[in-house]
Image (cartoon, rainbow, N blue to C red; front, top):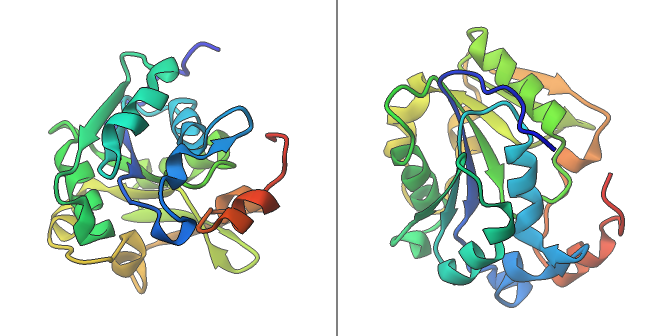
Length: 204
């Protein structure tokens, strides 16, 4: 499928650096629907209108990058995060630092969420391009992914430390846009093998 027309100044970050300890290790490499779990989130990011997709890897990074090779295209870039073991904040900082200087807005995906809808991601991104500082989908009262953030928030992301993600900064953020959706894929993530087994066998 051809890539959609790119929105100038937009990027995606796919966080895929963790070891997946609750899963028993190698979570993002786990086979799911005939390919590695991480491929689904990256594929969704590539199906959006962003100008580039930056996949942040750490634990078993070379293996994760190898599994992504069938998706390779000019918009896809793998970024190594040497400090990945610090926690989620290190991956986020690495992802933000990897973005081009002219980036106006970024979508943040999690590599263990295989059922993200690209159309919903573009709706979230559009809110930020229209002036919101950040936007996120909400399903059944639960905040979901991907989250879109304005470049105005990048300095705050660079100051994050430990196992803190985007939600730590967005809770209580003035102007945050929440998009109600009936799509459960925005909150389905994989922490354990049981979570993976509970996902629909067929993609949406």
